[in-house]
Length: 247
Figure 1 (tube, rainbow, N blue to C red):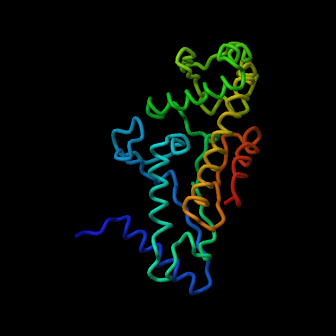
Figure 2: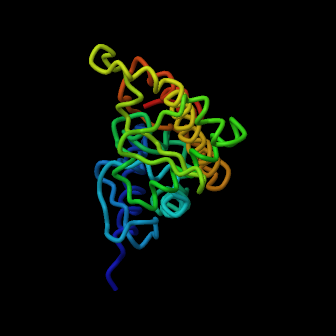
Figure 3: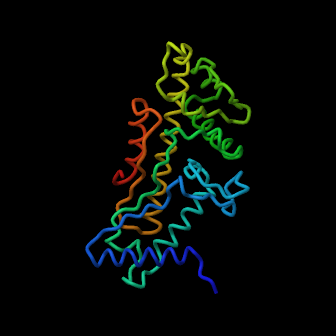
């Protein structure tokens, strides 16, 4: 029978690690590069009726997609390498595992482009964050001065609050947009929410690699820039402190 492409990939990875190891070379694995990664409809992520390739932070909050990612990592790192007799999780020449590359909530990726089911899921998580922080969504809205996001709708009745496009989290010329400072309280909460959600994902994946799969490698969260380094770089780098090194 025809061998699965995943089996061929794993064997190739094992052979590469063994060859590098023989020459004294360490290996770093990067499992998810969002620009080339395809979310397959068979994984069941909500709203994906076709395979989709391209940037998306959905991996960081969709449980079905995370489950598919974890299963692939399990297959890759726990299979015994015929060339070394070790699994990749056990092999000390596997120096670093990078969770994802060039993706993050604080970049320009627009959440309004997510499938509606995924957008509602993210808005529901924002609503839960605000409920925990303020005690009610009405209190959050009052703290924001009742500002709303143009072309996006809050739905407090159903516990969902709109996550604004990244532009609102950047520095804006107030001479051109004199109304922009009114969004500061709301954007402060949005930045905190996205930062905590992203860091929680990196902590979850660290626990999976380290404690479930038994990987001994250094774990690396990500490497990326933000939509505005003046406002967002510190928050982005803070999320990476969930793990050992930064790419």
